[in-house]
Image 1: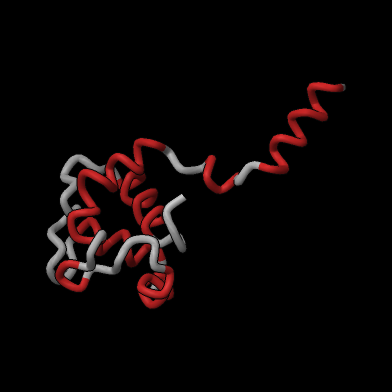
Image 2: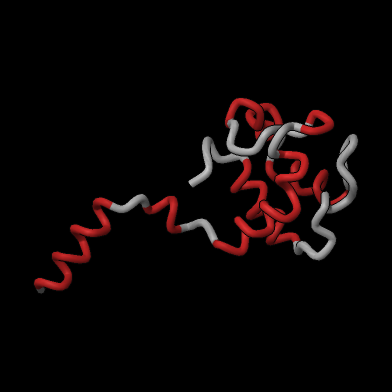
Length: 102
């Protein structure tokens, strides 16, 4: 019982959203997406700026995924992550469109 109480106490102080971020996603962002989304190169939405992503998100994540796969404006197909799977791209979109890095 005491272990459960300690676990509940620890979880209440921890940010559960930060636990959901896969380190692999962070690595992919750093090696592939940060090149453009870190500074907004070519009008790319800046990562972790919810306002910059709001209009794009309003079109639906399916549209964002399709654009990431096919390329959009100055973004090449798959961005700079030619080995990314659809799941990787979804995770990257979720990660970059969050309000701030976690």
